[in-house]
Image (tube, rainbow, N blue to C red):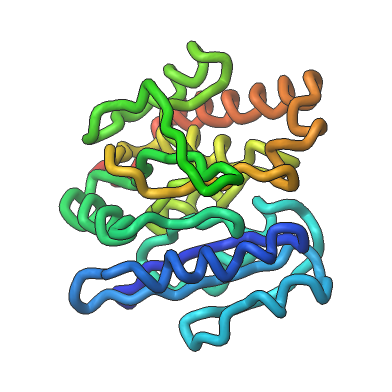
Length: 252
């Protein structure tokens, strides 16, 4: 496996216009010596809306596929993930300077850590940013900690799945993102935490864009019955994984 970090982005037409900003935030990253990034952009669908915004860069690969939501788009893109680590970057978000280097440092330093997350700042329409209270201390997140917090706080995790960087083999072993219409990234986060230790970086790693077209701002996202079903199956999966005792790293 090459010393490469895969940055994986699912995109649909309305969010495509933000790809150039995501690209600039990626180009600004400074990686440790010998490391490189490869950006996989997967359109959720087949339209003419996205490709005009895809950068002309040999480190960028663009593909299209059947519509199935962002989780399906990300998971199908894993077929081309040719690096040891996979970093999520939503099409409308931006990485902060040094983000990838911090992720790599945590994962390379401790092989018992399966994944990393970091602090998030909301990127508001006027260009200002806003933070949140309640972030955990920088350091390891032990198995089960994210699920316990999420359950006790009305299904809100204390770390953001949009900042995830994960070992590719671990991600594949869990089957990628959950087959849900939303919260597929939270479901993956809970499964990762059920099976492996994580790491939280207190320095902001992501600017999370707030805009009217984002999926989490749509009415369907907060439909009571669907939300309850999403949360139930995400929790059940995490608890089953924990009960079965499967974990990373594998026991001797």
